[in-house]
Image (spheres, rainbow, N blue to C red):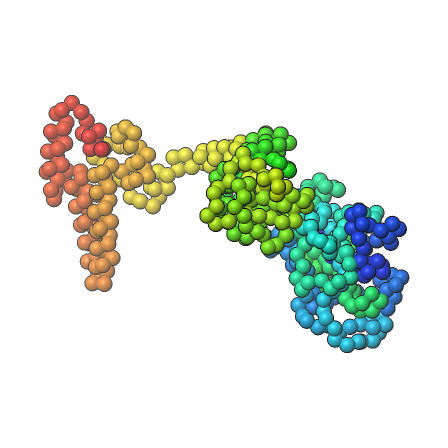
Length: 468
């Protein structure tokens, strides 16, 4: 049975969380150890320095939202934490008293992912935020967080809508076997030693391995277009690397080794807008919004930083990029490259082709009457025209007969207002006349018989001449 994953959005359970903490090389020596535990944050009393903060409760002032279609293992998921009202009553004395109305914006946040049903709450996946200066969020290296949790970096009030990028665990990552993802949030509102913790939304509180009232995302299959699995994947190239080189490097690490640069997709990028960029690369590359336009010959691309904080796409009217172009040295950009699995595409096209081989004649027969032919004539009697007869309505004379039959059907529809019986009779006469003319019957069929007779004496079959 597949396990589920719970994404927990939590608040710092120590004074350092409210005061903020530095990241990377600026991490202070002896910074307080972070437990990264949202569920039991105030189970035995709130942490030291936050003893006057109210324990967490649900609040409709906040929400956590994600894509309705769910997530794909190993790909980025866009998660939003939103504030839905301007003011919120401040909590005092650990929630025993109410203060004045203050801004509803929260100051503390912590996000992480665990498997639902896993009582140990082992964290999975990683958070990939675009670079900011100064950074507003960071991933604590503490054992309780393991670099897989996202925390606020300072006590400034956060935006009404914050966008977070979580890379869902790949199958097998930490024993992850797929299943649902649940987004949980616990927010800290108010000053350090006042205010309250909140779980966004409504429903039951979270518990170890239990989603409670938090958002649940289902696992989705790989992207498909018209029933055919999409074969083009956008990758971020290394510094000073062309898309030809990036796809070749990815091919070397891919079973089958069929990846190559998709020049057509690069050309199509000239008509992109921001939503196009997000749709193309959003599952693999984290981009700060809004995205920017450029006429640089290596676009689309990201800024030179490893975390790709800025993303660029071609401006309207720019010359198309090529697979062999490399970033301009002064910009230190990294290209975004469409790599297509040629082997997978060929295999899939072969499967589709095999599935529809000679299916057209049967499908046509199901919705159209048999194509009129001369006595003793079949599609095999018309060299090279079997497919034309099947898909195009037969030989020229057959098509003319079908056109006359269609005209008769229109006459039937027009005459319906004057009487159904009369309309059907008129249509029937029209169809019979058309077929008789083709087969050499009455109503002008003598010309057809004469042509057949004269051509029969020339040493060539009439069927081979009638199909032209």
